[in-house]
Amino acid sequence: MQDNKNFFLAIALSLAVLIGWNVFFGVPTMDKAKQDAAQNAKVAAQNSQGPIPGASPQTNTPPSESMAVIAPTRDMALMSSPRVKIETARVRGSINLRGGDVDDIALKDYHETVDRQSPNIVVFSPAGGPEGYFARLGWLPAPGAAVDVPLPNTVWTADGQTLTEAKPVTLTWDNGKGLVFKRLIAIDGNYMLTVTDSVEARDGTTASLTPYGFVRRIGKPVTQGYYILHEGLLGILGEQGLKEEKYDSLEKEAALSATEKGKSFPQATGGWVGMTDKYWAAALIPDQKAPYTATFSSATPPGGQHNFQTLLTLQPQTVQPGTAATSTTRLFVGAKEVNTIDGYQNTLGIERFKLLIDWGWFWFITQPMFKLLDGIFKLVGNFGIAILVVTVIVKAIFFPLANKSYSSMAKMKAVQPQMQALREQYPDDKVKQQQELMELYKREKINPVAGCLPVVIQIPVFFALYKVLFVTIEMRHAPFFGWIKDLAAPDPTSIFNLFGLIPWTPPHVLMIGIWPLIMGVTMFVQMKMNPEPTDPVQKTMFTWMPVFFTYLLASFPAGLVIYWSWNNLLSVSQQYLIMKRQGVKVELWDNLRGAFKKAPPKPVAEAKTDAKAGKPA
Image 1: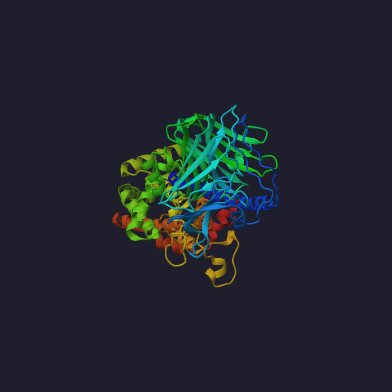
Image 2 (image 1 turned 60 degrees about the vertical axis):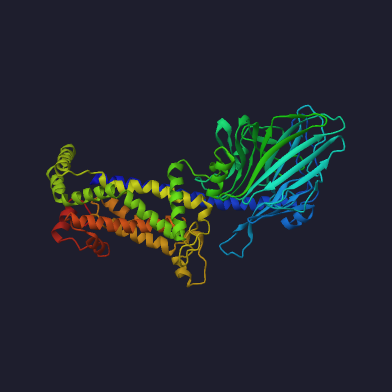
């Protein structure tokens, strides 16, 4: 029984360390990141830019945009250039005709808060305003070639005013030296654009050109700052597999040039590259059979703003007089919806595109967990109820194992008097004591570690559900009942303002809501189902553990706390029924009474004995 309790204690302390890391390190890191990003945005808005550089034939590097004045607002930046409107059922935005960038994307189905009247989520913003984030595709001169290609200030002409799902748009630019560049842009009903760049040679012109595309972000964005979530640059680079780089880590990489640091991945075939936030992402998907070079970089161009970039360059093409060269690249920009991402992987043949969502190392548990939750949600219409149903399903799946475990615990409790007698019989011979205990276990068919199995089983399920709640956009702003409007956010109530009765918003560390308190009570009751530990240190730890976990889990997603509370309640009921069936006394009520009852004073004789032995009375 002692080993059993030590195992429980080790599990609990491990959970406490992991959870405490998030509370005491993750949250402060996220707050600092927000402050840094705000400062970066302020500085960026004040900076001015130098002249626009062109593409360098020697370095084969895409040109960098620069502007004399950075617009103070996003709307002003949008109005500073001619545009083609984007309007679909799920996306609104525009294409910048100066440069041909896709730099204005907002998502109609998603809002900044749970209020449906709040502004839509904006993913892409123009380079000429605060927090620029955009994609650019086109042609570069092949190494050693001198060709006039479209630059960031090139003004294209369009054959239409609005890009819709039913009507693509073609942009055209003539360099006046025998080359005509065209860009056909189409968009589907979700978040995928298909960009086909072509160049036609006329008047006997020959040119060597390299297709390229990049996603660029100006300034360091706000990140969540949690170690279980990747935010930054990433991609599947053919056989090289998944590559991830956080924004900060790029600053420590080797220099790619005088102004640029990062990593280059040559000779990749298949896959994609891009940038990801918690719920939103942008990714470039080349022809899955065409070799390319991918580069993750962090740079501050001369006279420009610091930026982060994922770049892909494909093999050079030579266009002969009277012919045309073409290159098609897809651009995903939108919400990381599981079914949408999986659909693109399956229908478009994009290699491992589902890893755009950070499922983590335990994806083999996390992905099925989401599928199960999502399937039940489609039946019941509420993710909170789906979590309750999944908890019951998990309990049912592991019922035989849990039943065996609780039965073993009941038997262990039944032989407690014999175990105590053995300890008293061999107080100074621990080896003999353990031998006799093992014989007792064998004789009574007791597995001393079986009681740990329900806890061990719960751990992977707990973390899988935590990951699902934390990373999947389907859980974002998903309501339960009452005051829980977002299962992916912490319980918004707090005991320190009497759950809203006092007009005061407590600081983050004091936000302990109703559901965390329910979880703490159910955890306390579950622990009181078992005999009190004889070791005073363990007894103190187990007494305060529900309080400790109530505080730690208060900042976790409400859906996770609801799961834990419901799981505790089911465990208590299951253990109660099994112990009654085994004919073992349930000490719940006795332990609860003892927890709130003052310890009786020691008899005088016992106090004198303690005094003689040097113990405090």
